[in-house]
Length: 266
Image (cartoon, rainbow, N blue to C red; front, side, top):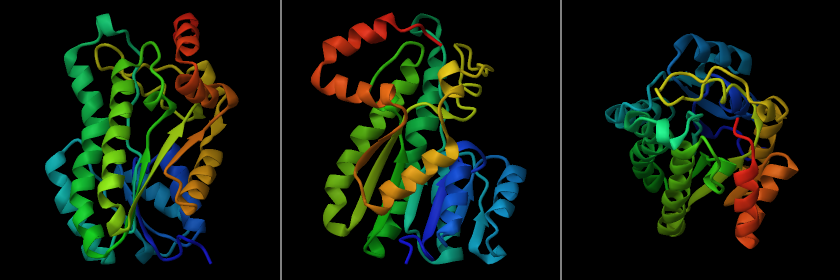
């Protein structure tokens, strides 16, 4: 029997990339889905692709940076499904700009999307999970949440912040059967680099070479589903180089810092 059969899974950033791939993978597992992103038409497209009955998918368009919408949105999910078993924080935006050039407004926006939006939704969902005596937060961080690299300072900062916040939440709520899985993808072939922000907050508009050669979103989603099924606390997904960087940071940080300095920015 599937771990996710008839479980309510709420996915942000569900209209493309890893979020879309997760929706399709979890639909095959028999999950009940809540799909959130800004674009209603794209959410409707993903809903159709799941092949699930109409009643088993709630499309809930939302700009996650509108923090005051988090609690009402959680209330709508509870009204529709009566519970929330998994909250998948996948919405996010990357960055391609140097610190010296990047405006403070761009940093604020990166933190709002990549960190504070997850905090707002977590605080809205957590009371329901505590009441039902169980729940699971799945946080899509990045290898960038472990290793800082050029032209991604704000993105790195936001992803690092996720680890601190959700490690604390995991410890605080362990006895209430609240679980946390932090997922650290490396290079995944999605539009994340195309949609990344430059120093003025505009789209970067280019596909990184490493992104182009990365794992497919479908393979990434399959590995995420497997890690969540096993209730792993943290998982790294990607090629050898980016995953190895996490262990270099832990055991040979000086070597990693030299390698990062020599890396050509993309």
